[in-house]
Image (cartoon, rainbow over all chains, first blue to last red; front, side, top):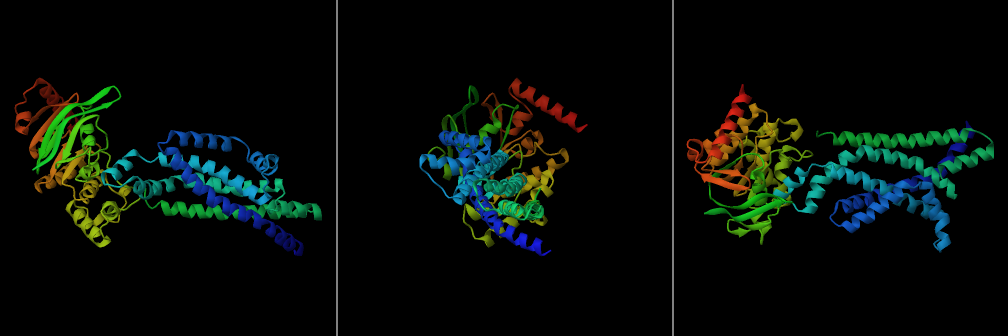
Length: 213
Length: 247
């Protein structure tokens, strides 16, 4: 029992990195995703093309490759990043690409009649988006966003590959050190706990938004 | 007073000419029904008046204000009701009515809510202010949509087939609300397939065909004694359809 507690607290220390990475990535990738989506539905063809290439590359290549690129690749051209900034940067850019596409699809799923009703009532573009379109979009993008939020928990384990001491790496160190399988089981329990919290939060959000329709 | 003046307005979608040199004027308090076969440009005409479609030629004046030069000011004089209601589903009935007064007109909340409640009573939905649109019947939705348009206190109301997506038994309640507005002397243009309504309520009837108003006259003349064969054929067809659907 003592051993389990010891290993748990060791792994918990490692999970601080995981939490930090998770929170920073979630906040900034969602924000960038909203901007990306608004850019993609804007009338600026050039911006649309740039964003199209961006999401094509970052959704179409492995996250691990992008991570290696940022950490091992960029130093070749003279840009050296510490492991954590490299991981955060890669995760934000990668997840923002997914959110850009999710939010774009969400916004485009809103009926044109909503824009017309807002226009004839005198609302301008910004008011229409912030008060009419985006609130309705949030409800529709909650399920896919929930999926990404859970993926992010699991993807965060990839940072172990560039030497970051995250939850998974702590478990692996403990396994090697103690020649025991227990740390992996504890790590799995940790991941499940985090995922469960996220699922619960999203379920609550979906309930809140199910007031209408 | 002249509320709307359209001078030779033209509208094309690609190669398709939808409005072809359309001119007319509407006086204060007049109720105009716009009838005609589908694809004749009725809806497009209303949509051009309120700026949902840009015209390719001609000029529109709303209370003397050019929509080209001062679009925002001109369009603000009008309210519009759509075939598909287009209520805001994430807002309650009351919020649907207060949204624009609060954020466009910057009215204070108390005034906006008070006016919204008065309007809801007027359309017979005083008890529905906390409902969401999804909880209402089609007829109730359309009555809320009318009240919402009225919440901006427009001088002119445009109705784009307000009863076309309603079950037959719900058409009456919506038409009676529009009738009430007509009695209040609000200037209205109503695109409709309800010939009874067009005959009884309107001061003038526009008959449109192929992007032109081919007849602009009092209802008696169009319904009792239609001048052209085209109108006669249309009316015969519509009346037969209506008879068919009521069997």
